[in-house]
Every structure is written in C-alpha cells, then in structure tokens.
Image (cartoon, rainbow, N blue to C red):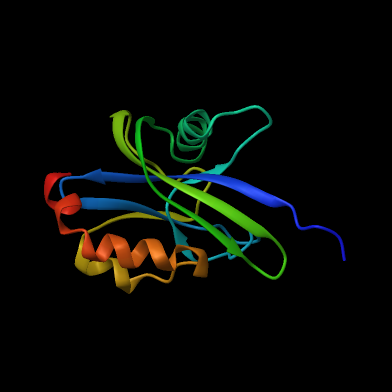
Length: 138
C-alpha cells in the first residue's frame, strides 16, 4: 500500500444576518446528498484564498470576501484524506445560487444540527455550535 495523497479543500463559512450558508452535495459525487460548507479543491499553485474565491464563484455564482482562517481539519476517509481549511467569508456581490450543488440553505445556529454533514465536519460543527458570538455579529 502506497502513501495516501492529501486532498486540499478550501471551504467558506459565509455568514449573513445571523445565518450560515450550507450547500448539498450533488448526486454522483463523493458523499452525495450530505450538506457541507461551500468550497472546493485547490488547483496547482493556487492559494487557499484564491481557490475559495474561485469555487464560490463557480459553484454558487457570487463574489466573496475571504477573511481569516477559522479552523483547519485533516480527516482520513477510507478512500482518501482531506485537509480542509475553513475561512470566514462574506458575500461581496451577487446572490448565492445552487449552480454546481443540489441545493443551498441559510441556517441559524439551532438548525445546524438538523442537516447531515460529512464526518470531516464534525469538529467544526461542534465549535460553531459553541461560538455564539460568531452568529450574533455576522
């Protein structure tokens, strides 16, 4: 068995009016049907911030202001290992629309637990549930 490649994924925590943007993974994709924070894989030579800006534009059709790193998580699935970096973001222009995802939702802190997320997001979900200031000031 050879070494496992790590897939780098930049994801956005997009808050607006006390709600957080989540998206549903499309049919046929890895972990299809589960909910996640929007973003995607880094391309060769791309920074985390540039990848996130590009992915939000491609997947949801809006321009984001990418802010500070909120959390980094490395998670090993049976078929691959992912390194996720979650950045705080804001909508700069446009309106998020489900282009390359099945659906999207704006959820408040109490609703976050109502949606099934991939195992890799578990630590982040716990932190977001505790971080009440993030929801109030957003």
